[in-house]
Every structure is written in structure tokens, then in C-alpha cells.
Length: 172
Length: 172
DNA sequence: ATTTTTGCAAACCATTTGCAGCTGG
DNA sequence: CCAGCTGCAAATGGTTTGCAAAAAT
Image 1 (cartoon, rainbow over the protein chains, first blue to last red):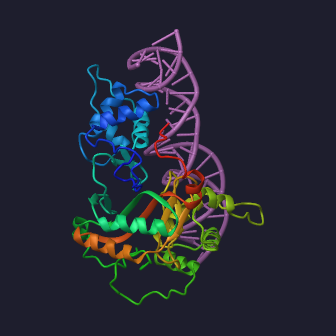
Image 2 (image 1 turned 120 degrees about the horizontal axis):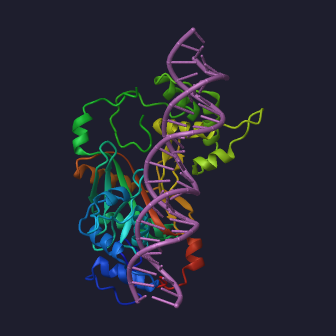
Image 3 (image 1 turned 60 degrees about the vertical axis):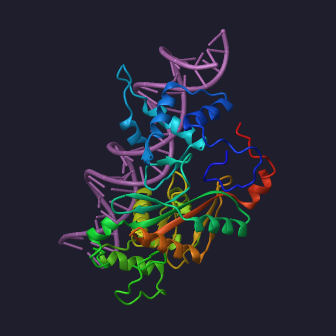
């Protein structure tokens, strides 16, 4: 449903009201499929959209609060819900390392990433030329682009300072 | 060692002769680290650089020929060698799905990818503006870029024709 | 009441690793 | 000869799944 990442620019029907909350959007998505917005799921959407950090399943599990009875949402449910949120276009997968990272794909402007291979830091940036470039290339190849991922890998300023002085032949 | 993907443009020492074979380049890389170009490793480099396909560890294992005694290179060695080839900048990792894909990063011009989310096809393209854009962005953020990955996701021409006619609200 | 969801634990699957014996230089 | 390899099999680690109990409509 026309996310910020979506390249399709036809306006088949009324644009969705960008004012609905992630939770509301998730509820709609589930309703359409005859599925339910349960307590664990509500807890997860709320928690996830309370901050704009990147995160992975493990971090999420660790951060989650326990309920009154000291029970946490199970790891299995976390994974299942993450899958749903991705299908609902509320989250986007990142795959920079062996574990899958997630970031908001709803209510958050389209952007790309700089990834420090040294300290694993991830910095976001916006660049409009990129989108144009993407559509150009897609057109040339007869593709219908629905999204893209542009990751620049290298050393962040901190790591450049930390080890930049070294020469670049130290293969051993 | 100054690969096509490398953004560092200082010329610390004589540029490597681009005429040496992947096998030769691998041998040098290993020699520097006091390691050996063994029979299994030689078989792997040769096999891998005989074609320009993308591949993953599993496909590689499946394709590998058995020796005279009907033994194949073990899966463990395949993984270990792939890691080495990546370190040697002969191969590059791709990470489009859950399994790691590999492609040549030596003797093959720098390029990016269109990824069809329907049939999983991967098409390569070259675009020089992208590299410039990458360096610009890196500079703005104080990064020292060493590479990038730009993947445009969407439907390839074939899949557009196959299912393009459908409207775009079919969430169910 | 019926269908979906949850939590647990076991299963999965790609990848990694310990180790004893083999091998290249 | 000796450091570095290989293969095997067992271990890992992230993610998925079967199933019976629990919850939602």
C-alpha cells in the first residue's frame, strides 16, 4: 500500500491518510486477512514505533518489558510478528550482517545507509538524485521498481581517525 | 588491493598487473600470509572463475566435480575457501536472501543489481553517476567509502507482463 | 464455537569449528 | 620436517515450526 519506499506512482485510489498510527495501520492489514491484533502484537508495534532505531530480533526480545505476571512475549511470537510487520510494509529488512536488522518503513522518510564495517555503525542519509537514478535504470531495463537498497560500506569518521593513519598494505 | 570496488584512490605502490589470473592473484594473497594454494583451493578458484554466474555455497558444492577417486571437496573447505576469496578481494558477498551469494570482484567491471522479487532473477547494470554520488555522500558524512551495494528491487519485464495487469490492492 | 495465536521446545539450515591425519613448500 | 590443510562430524546461532493450551470474535 504505497509506502514511502514504493516507486509506483500511479494513484489508483485515494491515497491513505498518512495520519493513522502504525498500530492502526497494522490492525487494518490484519483485518483484511482476517487476522487479529492481539495483546502481544499490540505491545510489539507500539514498542517498535516508539523509537526510530534500527534493531534486530534479539535486541527487541531483550528490550521488551515483562507483563504484570513477569512474562515476556516469546521469541517465536517476536519473529512471527516481525514477519507480519514486514508484510504490512510497516518495517523493512536490512540484512547488513548475519542477523536481519529492521527499520521503520512507515511514517519515516525514505533514505539509504552508510555502514561502518569496523564498528558496525549505521548512518542514514537522504539523497534525491538516487531515486531518480533508480527509476532511470529501471526503465532502461524494463523493470518496475518497487524499492531499492543502497548501502555505502566503509569507515565512519571515528574509525577513520582510529585506524586511518595506518597504511593500506598491512595484509598480515 | 585496489579492486574495482575499492574507493581508495591513492597509489601507494605500483598498480597490480591486471593481467594475472585469479588463481595467480589468489596464490599471491596466500603467499603473503604464509598460506598455501592447495589442490582443493586451486580447483575452487578455477571452477569459480570459469563462469560469471552468481552462486551460493550450496550451488557450488553441487556443481563441483569429483576427483579420480570419486571424492569431492568437502563443504567445510568450500566455506573456508570462499571466505578466503572474499578476503582476497576476488569475490564479493551479495546477501540478497537468507543464503549468502557470491560474485566476481576481480577482472569484472564494477556494477550493481536489479533484483526481481518475483522470480528472483538478478540483472547487472553499470552506472557511473552512482559512484560519484557515493563519494559525494561519503564525503559529506566524513566516511571513507570502500565499496557500496545498490540493489533495485521490483519486477523484471517477464514478471511485469505475467502479473502486471493486476491492480495493486490485492492484499488478500 | 470456531478460528487464530501463543509459548515451549524441538527442528531447521546455513555456516563454523575441533580434531586427527594428510600435504604442500 | 612442519606449519598449514582437509574431511569428518559435531557444534553454533539465527530463525522456523509442530503442537496443545489460551485468547479473540
